[in-house]
Image (cartoon, rainbow, N blue to C red; front, side, top):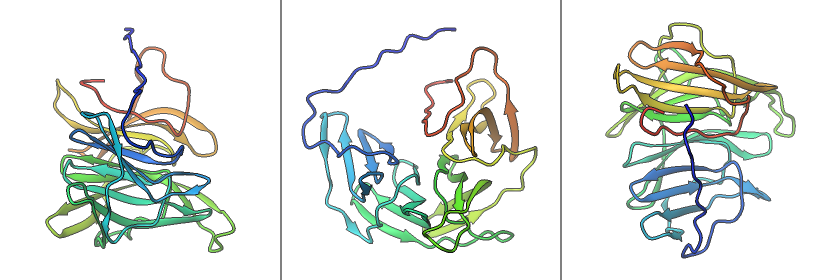
Length: 252
């Protein structure tokens, strides 16, 4: 089935456009698209907001404990709070910190989540995904640096899965008991939350990434059963890729 897609460039925006960059992340909260971090000539820590209703860019005045700039981090929202996990803060140096941004007050706060009962805290990493789904934030995969010398890089690809439960002031990482064979280790993949319109079952859908070469496989993680399943859809699929993005629209 072929779907007609039409792109439209947004010209005539009000306010100053963000500087060119890559490795940044974006989330939507109501009419606002909130963009943080990334870099071009060095990593930046600015936060830019695009108001879809007014076609306007602005940089809010930030408060609180503002994080340093980072790239290739996890960025997710439940609609009222935005969380940032990990990312590259300088060459060879990755973060394992967790931050919260209040998009009403534009106030940052560093969080200190408890570790799972049976596992350590998630290690510092980049290229992972952080996805909000059914009341929890799910962290999957990424790339760690096992070198103790920040000038050296000993890459280690990851396929671990963590779930963060954040209610009130209680912030705890969990590591689900997994069923099925998980995807191979990877970074720079995409991950979306999808609830089927027919079966009404919550799932994470993961596509692609890289672990030394580009990947083109498709996986689902069933949240009710903590089960991984590799998907083999019919039709002509995309070429293997990494550093892409994905969103859910209806049942697609």
